[in-house]
Image (cartoon, rainbow, N blue to C red; front, side, top):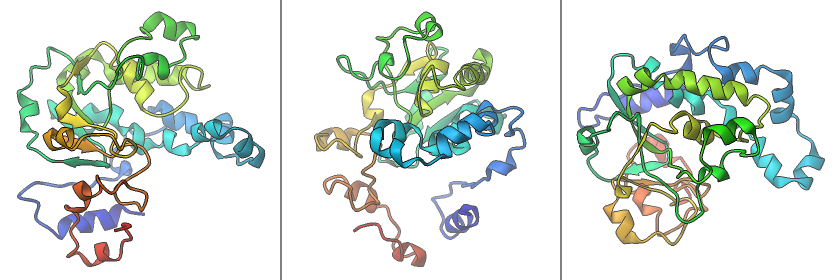
Length: 273
């Protein structure tokens, strides 16, 4: 529904010579249920019942469970990140950016980082006992217990630098398929693309300097402006997106200053300004 509009929007402006390509999922013929576990799982009656059956008593009884039932967690668009080497077979390295980030500085320095043979360059998020693997995976499951250290430090999606040659060598997509297939009944982890990412790139992640990617602008009001000003990328992860009325006022201008109000259809958008 949005594909044509997005393609037109990016044709209306010149982005300093950058080549911008807006693709449809259908452009990639390998993205089908015979190859993708997540599509196959979406076709299963049990999973459809879990995600799409709307029972009022569940909503009032268990709000946490309702969070896990959001179908966005199985969206193919969310899981495309596990197929980057196949989407871009000629590329050696690629930078992955979420749609709720703002790039503040030149990112070409990422290409100069020695990845030490690792696949995924990412900023770690753990501090104290928070954001450790134990928070994302079910360590009462024997397979998880045998494979992972519960105290291992988690990292963030949002700005990830991937060495696609190392990815192909390490067979990371096959690893993702293995664990995603095992998790059809949601006993290894409950939701999202971060847990399968944490397990897929468990031993192949290179920690990046934290100023490359500062997170939390969608929920944490205590992030200092010094930290934000030093950041190459800031990330409005969580619910308080800068284009919504519930955004935090001190962070909102970081995003709104880049909105092109000359475009007529942008003027008709309600960005809660």
